[in-house]
Image 1 (cartoon, one colour):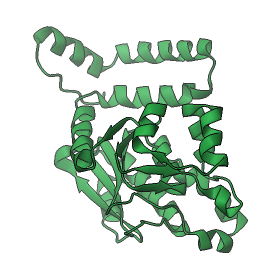
Image 2 (cartoon, helix red, strand yellow):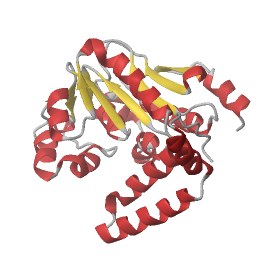
Image 3 (tube, helix red, strand yellow):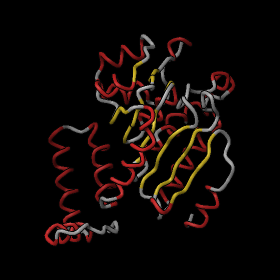
Image 4 (cartoon, helix red, strand yellow):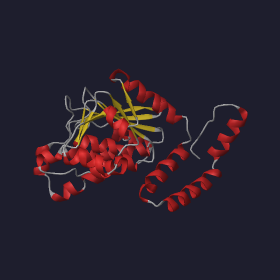
Length: 267
């Protein structure tokens, strides 16, 4: 799709969430909109994936933000929908939830209040998790005789280790935003009143950098998650070498020596 087609798609009325484009600040927002608990329906997940992909393809967007209306991010999925969905449909859930991770652009999620189940899993697939002090994270599937099915336990274990993951998953424990920060899966934990301004500041911070260098760093770090140290260092060297010939690197060096802000173009 070209930019016009993408914007036409993004102007559609979506079920369970809304979309905002702020091209002046080069940002696209997805806002969960089924308050008070922003339950995420089964059918909603595939459309969310498509919106993430559209934002990623939009030439005017540098940063993607996922947030929610009201005092809770999301209490999780529509439980009844799991019983009604076909096994084939359910098998695609993890792919849809992984859409933020696959985006080449940085994705920030703003969490407050309940961030449970698929709401937590979506947040774990983002690059930066900004939590309000009111945030409560949980993977409560054990209460239903189930386990997380969209990457929740897998991503969490990579971030915080086996012992803490078992504590959260096997005991269905709720974890505060501050504890998430202390354990290392939350980027920043801020007072509730500062959540939006913190996200705004991070968007503007990320926009200062080279889009090419940002894309390269995100893919490199994600790909190296399962690599040995030797392979990871080798891949980092290859990516570094490629960026040395980029126009953005040339601009960055010239701007540094001229003591002026760099103007990156993603080339």
